[in-house]
Length: 432
Ligand SMILES: Cc1ncc(COP(=O)(O)O)c(C=O)c1O
Image (cartoon, rainbow, N blue to C red; front, side, top):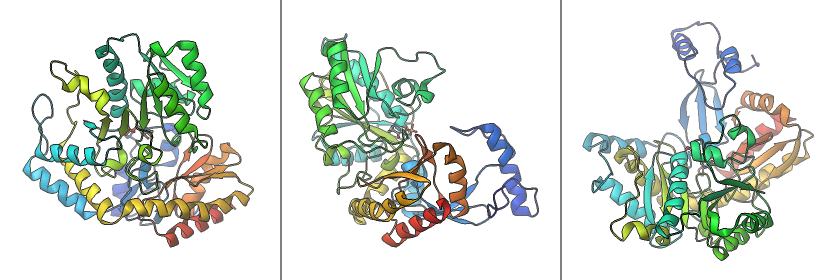
């Protein structure tokens, strides 16, 4: 056990820790984990969050460098969200949004999202999270082309390093080989192009034929694949290629949406004027207080399904969940009232100023920063990442490694400039 890392996994010595022992009895199968190691070392048990900080069961405080899994954009412990959800739960928790049924709160949220959509007139299809949103967008892209009388347009293109969630479609689109290896072919007609070179997409279009390609999926910033910012001009170039060849452009904004992209923008699609055919979202929609996702469909994509007589035979029990919609409305309200889009823009500069100097450390090879409230502190030796994450915890920073040893820094928008400095100091001490 690391010094200063509390009593995680130790024998019980007090009633509080007794409770901890039963929590870590070993029944929980964690996502993306070496369960042998987790079982041997014990879990990192988080019990409370407040603003930009989280606390473990021993009361030790950590700066939350990642905003959970990139979602707590408004910070932890907001009672307004709890109150909004509580009010909705006691009114009606959820009913359905299949057929002609909808909750009033779900209708209100759809209208609000349509108002901030980068493409005017967009329609909103609700999901339970990011992976659902990806599955929805893949199916909608193919169905759209069927409705256009072009059923042969089926190929879906993603990029190396891409992460599009872990449902069958997202797993197939993964540009991180370890995330799709070992499952066989879950989805046919998927192609992968270089993440940073628009010519790679163009080459694929020439080889496969635009007449066979349904859609191109693109994270404006590569997230879980290692936090890579788009090369200058890249997004505009791939957008133009898709437009020229009549390929649907899907912006996966599960991470970048709802302000994280900075530039006082709700979406990267607005900041880079991408005019996407679809936008996939989740996380920041509710700041992760309850699970919810949404697909924004531009008028072009929605029209065939709104003209009458055509169904999109797709939907989720919890799509548009009323309590989740109440949380999302309260979240959007907080973002507006507190000017958090501007705060995310401030963080873009703060993170770059405070974290770039970490590149001087021998243990750090590069700091990728300067776009949105997102930064990667790239470790020179990726194999040291697990130990570095534990060391950072020891020094009061909760983060994780993405891609090949990139430490993820994506704090809540309410992290102050002084706290960013504190975060940088703690990281420097831990990695020195
Ligand atoms: C870009 C991107 N797309 C999709 C997803 C999947 O979202 P979820 O984990 O909510 O299913 C993620 C999750 O991190 C993501 O980063």
